[in-house]
Length: 239
Length: 220
Image (cartoon, rainbow over all chains, first blue to last red; front, side):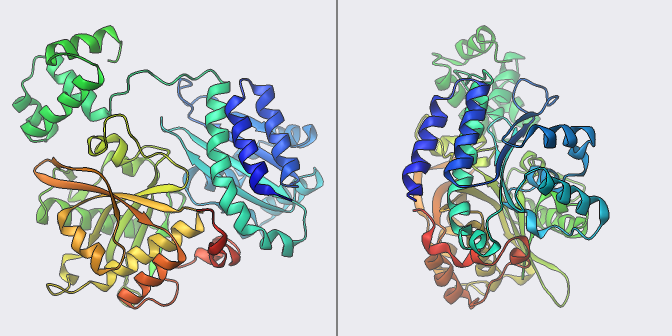
């Protein structure tokens, strides 16, 4: 099993994915290539959605998805809770499942075809959005643990590319000009008629630092001077 | 020992977080006079609201915080991209699932080492970064630092590979560099500071032990 070749192929394929059914196909391919039981990807706070809806694509069988929604396991699932708050990989085997709701949850998951072992890999995105790629397997525990280095080596990278793929499939476009929050702030106050010294006081920066940010913003906007940069701020609708 | 706290553990570790924000205020505002906002004696910035991972060195006998730092993935909001982007050539960014950023490194000033000596808490925290990095499958940590840190990294045998051009921010000459995450890096830090055994508490409880022992096969 030459995983390296497959790993690179999957990343290349992810880059050409254009819509949601192709996202699902890619997750199914990933499941097959790594001989897993299931692969699932969930994202929240995606840009342009105001944090309202979550994105889900999974190779779970439909009955499990229905059951999950019916029982509102979104609230209970400890993998999601930890995966969306921490940046470390989450090992499903490390949850305390002696309490009955959790034991029932994991038990049901296995009944519905989710693997007994699982790992989840958090992704943090540029716009503050978060993703979580989960894999599960029914291989023998010994083998699962032996393969742990490959999971930890490949899946943070795959998770990142799947995340970018979903943003693209959902029609998100990179803004052409990106100002950092500081650059934007310093320019906005100029637009409001403040001098660099005044802006420095407002933002508790030195005057020099303010000029520095303004100059960076000016260059990014390809403007000749500060006034020109402020004008471009409006014409590019960056405010 | 090094304790690792993610956002999911904030409530149970409120006490240590509080100590950390106060320590940061003392170090970055009072001692180093950086342009940071201190509110109620606590230094907190917008990246603390991005659910970072904190590494804290805690004295096991006294329960007191000795030093801390903060890790953020470079694929999400981070200081090098969002604050210090000017350090890199125009248009260049560091964004990789294999690279996290370390920031707000500080040590309790009362524990400061004698001049020319390396503080044990420093090497313990650096060792913790390497252990956590190996756990998460990273190969590099990037950081923004001032000249004062350059000597410390060298003494700890964890010298960064500089990237970009050192630049003045708020009167401080600021550098950026890439730090190796590897077994070898961990070994060198261990020797520089006498930490032969794992320094991070409870990392094994998060995942089977082989994760940490199988670093040799991590993709370079």
